[in-house]
Image (cartoon, rainbow, N blue to C red; front, side, top):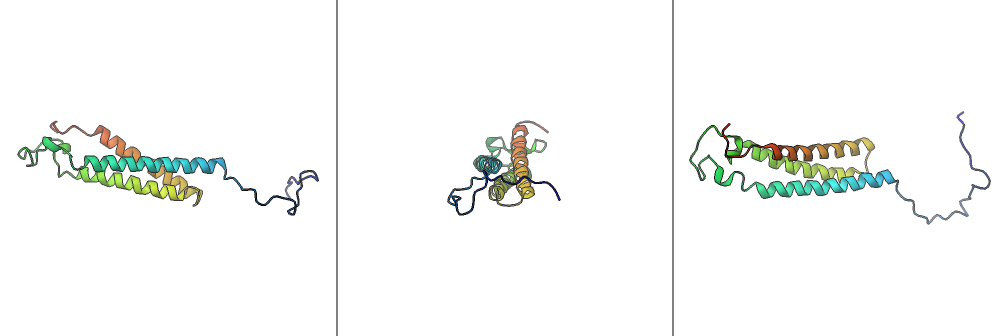
Length: 143
């Protein structure tokens, strides 16, 4: 039988004498995880709003698919408003926001592995969107 510490007579408080109205505080780690999930949800929302704002413009006056300029092949994908990458970036923005909502719901309420998975996936999706938008080529270059 393993040794365990028992309360001494001085530390012992009967349930009759204990104040049951005292609120139990959640552990600091759980609070930190919930704050992280909330911050990631706000970040995911900002990413989604940035993507929705830039989606109608896409390549605007630099398009080579018949809008302002005539069709001309050989440019990078950002020069064509119909390129699948624009839709993929929009889908990635929506997915990052929806997964961040899942992370906010799972933080502190679900299992530890589900919480870690949802937070990790949220960070990965937001980082992927930021990196992809940052390194995409300008629309005026040739491929």
